[in-house]
Length: 290
Image (tube, rainbow, N blue to C red; front, side):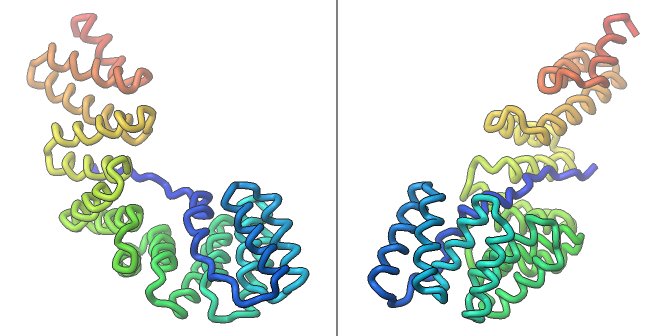
């Protein structure tokens, strides 16, 4: 049994996380500079409609300002105007071919729309311009994971980790890639680094549980999954994992003639997963003396 749990990365959250990557504005006229400052201030305060208006006004005065275009593209993306966001970023790539922010976001927008090929092409464009770009390597690694190519995923996720070792999810993705190819000590090391940066990373906690489980250390595995439920009481991976572990222990106890122990384990199953049919079935049989 080898079903490492995993938290799916929320692409929408990336829109906020990468917002600080834009370049600073070039020397420009006072009115444009004021509008850009007002737009950035409104963006920071969450006043997205105001921010969009200010950057649009700035671009009417300075149509080629790539900072304003990048910020406008980011704001369009945050407000669901993905076509307009792509248009703004594409203008940046034409005006400033060595800009890495715009193609990175074109790749993210392609991921949002399920176009892995287009996304992959944009991320490769970024690393061709800047091989130390942690975000692009991260996403290339993620695409390789989706394509079930863990060897290439590991290569790029290592580069992402080396470029930005302070990002918990980068360590987590690398751990998952190691896990997929059976390099369990490497995986465990990266899960530990994930948790050192984010002790509440339930994906890493769940996956560590599976490593212990497959080693036969059921007690330690259960401890990991119960920790997940302490952090996130409705985590579906932890619920599934615990129910599976308790059911296995219950069946082993029953076969060994330890009926009371079996009953206790199936009751533990139902405590975490009240609708578990296997546990309910066997408890009913025990009540009937079978």
